[in-house]
Length: 130
Image 1: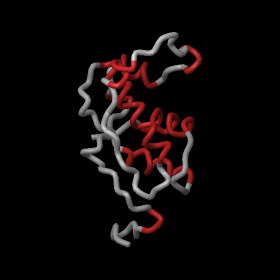
Image 2 (image 1 turned 90 degrees about the vertical axis):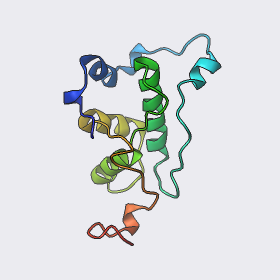
Image 3 (image 1 turned 180 degrees about the vertical axis):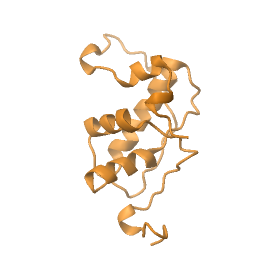
């Protein structure tokens, strides 16, 4: 289901409320260990959701790195896209908006809310058809 901050452990809640100023770039990067936390590449189709896909990829990698989850972790880009469209009126977004919406509304898994490559602007919300 939807993962809200209310039902996450305290450690994960703290993780999602991080302060960017506390994180410095590493002096040395280990490409092999970095690649071990990457999830498979996904297609956004023709939608304007590139910042959402990059955000979900970042969050999946951080959940793997910080909490030891398997590389099969798969967060829902559709959930964050829905939140962005609901709040902005279109699919375009920026990182600070994505972080803000995730902090406010939590995350969902791809299994619960799979990504639809069709733009909501082209789909009748009552019938879910073009």
